[in-house]
Amino acid sequence: MASSWVPGPELAWRLHVESPIPCVLFEPVREGAGAPRDFQWTALNPAAEALVNGLGLGRALSSWGGVVEGLPEWDALRQVVEAGTTLSFEAHLGTGLEERWFQAKAVKHGEGFALWLIDITEARVERRAFREELERQQAVRAREEHLRLALETARMVTWEWSAGPRTLTWSPNASAFFGQPEGVPRGTPESFLSCVHPDERKRVAEALLQGMRAEGPYTFQFRGQWADGTVRCYEAVGQTFHERGRTTRMLGVVLDCTEREQAQAALREAEERYRLASWATNDVLWDWNTAGDHLHWGEACHAVLGYLPEEMGGISWWEEQVHPDDRKLVVEGLRHTVESGGESWTAEYRFRRKDGTYVHVLDRGLVARGGKGGAVRMIGSMMDITERKRAVERMQEEARFRERFIGILGHDLRNPLNAISLSARALRRRGPLPPAQQQLAQRIEASAERMGKMIADILDLTRARLSGGIPLNLAPTRLPTLCQQVMEELTVAHPGRELVFEARGEGEGVWDPDRLAQVVSNLVGNALEHGASEGPIHVRCWEETDTQVLEISNAGTPIPSHQLATLFDPFRQVGTGRRSNGLGLGLFIVRELVEAHGGEVRVRSTQEEGTTFTVRLPRDARQSQRGTRPIEAHIA
Image 1 (cartoon, one colour):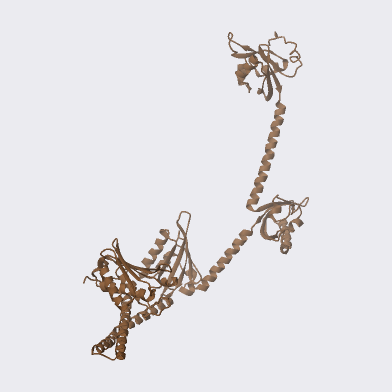
Image 2: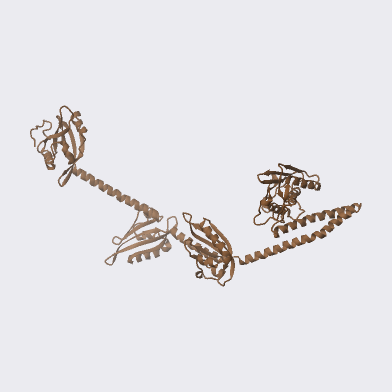
């Protein structure tokens, strides 16, 4: 070790042989007058000598980098030498089997600096131990908080009973869990029993005693009563620990199962309603898991179909029981609903009973779908409609008979009615008659004409209902010309009434002129009969693309809104307060004739605008179809 360095009077005491603080003097290593490129020590006190020699540190400070951690940058050390600043830093040195930490301080000394090393290993170890203890405590508090949040989220509390001190310990959320003031329940079983519903305290106390003797886990349920009177359902789950045959402690949790009990009660109630509904409606309820073949059948299947529920099979068995003539259409409809994303399915078909006979059923089902839209379940009901279907068929047959009878009656009445009309007309033409007789003849002729219109309406009704539609004799027709002819006839029959006609376009098309004249006559006659007597009747017709529009409007009392939906039904009278001269078939025949042409008729009626009937006709009725009813038409 170099010993030529003699400290100045200011540092002599610090470098004394007895000084416990290691101190090393460094001087810069320069090349010419340039900045220091390194530092090397020139003197060590005994404490520093033990460190340097023990670690095998070289004289140059740059050689310390592999052993000493935390050395400052060269620029910082140059500032100590050149500017006289003091530099503090923390250094870590390895000393064989032991690691040491030092608080280092570099102070300018002469041309170099003195490096003091104050040992802070114990303080650092204590600080680290303190920090680790703090982290451990924080982790414990975090686990406790997590446990608290988990217990609150799961709606449960934990408890522990110790046999030695006979104490009952609860998790911190017990007071809120049992709806009690803070601090309740306390550390005794009696305090816990105060949270139990009075009707169940004896049973819960017995359950706790049985739990002490239990080998392994045990559970029981009870009702708790909150301080505000609320009643909740709880389930206690515990584990008893024994030592040498004696109970030492019990651990467990209490869960709030109120919602679960309510859900189970609701489920039991729903199942009971399902069972009662099945009995009350006498419908066969079914439940199909669409992923497989299994079908669950309700109990009514025995009363309706003769099968016991266990005798009825899955979806394949159901398909086999559908009548062969109905099977393809019914099965394809069901499959299409399930696979196409439909929500409901309805079908009427014949189903084979256990005795081999067939019943007519109305089957309806609703599809439940999963998150991706695929069908997962289908629930439905099968209703026996055999008697209803027979009753409907009887009613339809009776209705057809009545309409056929009316048609025959109307046809046969024409001959005597024509005779009456011709006789009255001949009587008037024979010569001058006394005024009284002339008035009687005119009344007979007018009444016969009105009866003739009624008979014509009855025959049209019969054709519409029984013959598949009113036959048409189609021919090229100009609607404006036809409208003018009808209005001229009605003007003569209703002198003093104002009829206004407007037409735009040629209005040419292929229609039945006689039947179309009947449409115009019925609508204008309806306006004359039910509209305001002092207001005009407007008749308009115009052309649209491939469509001819006819509109008849009048002022007056609007048609009640509840009658608009059935206005075109047969034998309906508009409730305007006036007595009608017809049978209520005029608007029905208008609709039948318009639809026979492939068109449509609509009505709107308000206090402000009055009543307007709008008829839309295709330009050529030959190219139109009316549902499944054929158009009987030919070009005249």
